[in-house]
Length: 357
Image (cartoon, rainbow, N blue to C red; front, side, top):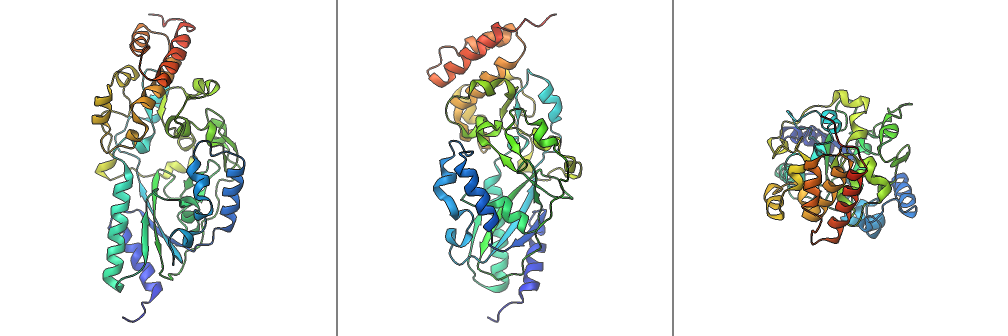
């Protein structure tokens, strides 16, 4: 087969990606030298906490050809996820009797959907030009996806370390096709955060220690999802009622006034998790937890950590007999981890004046 016109192919790939349901496609080179330095400095500072896989994979993240041989370009895709009809985030955060779940986890897990869509894009390319080398990723391998997306023009990395798009804010997932096709690369996105520091100032646990400097060990998303053991006591009160992830830095970002609601049925709110009562969630048995988190990103933390997180939120809530009864029901839980956090929560409850009326 004759060599394709790569400029025409690149334009077609962007068109096909949108036809398949992605909101935008960009193409980047594999040059991540500056990002590799940032990664290594972050690892050296220990800011990855217990995420040992970040260090274990090392420079494979910043050298795509070492992860998938022959890679010369990366096709980046973004997919909006903010679910329509979800209860307003700030309203949930303001009601300490409710559990706050990060917007990305209110519906089905995105990994399979993004991978399947990337595979369809690869199949469409192959149908046009024949067999080619590629590998699809959706947060499923050591990939510096935000840096690659930035280099492909999809957005810039904000001061909170989240990718921001001028026309779409930051409520979107990313996916990549590593490929051996020498496609023309897009111009990297430029930074438009300016002097704004809202994300740094709003962080409940002060995890954003400087522009684009996130200390994961203090981040509520890390504490509620990645951390397997005990949550440091000094960080429990600032967690408030956030039981799975945290969105505060995105909620205050001015660029999210341009964000679009997702049109994906898979991302619609499930089981009322956009504002469920903490006491009710704490009452889920392991069987109920597994049944209600089928296909959800929440399932990865398991029932034990689910109870740990909710115990902290209950400890942060105003004192009430319903909360005290819920906590007492788990005081003798078989898990040491759960018992510890329940005991802390009960101490917090006993130290809090009862709610009047």
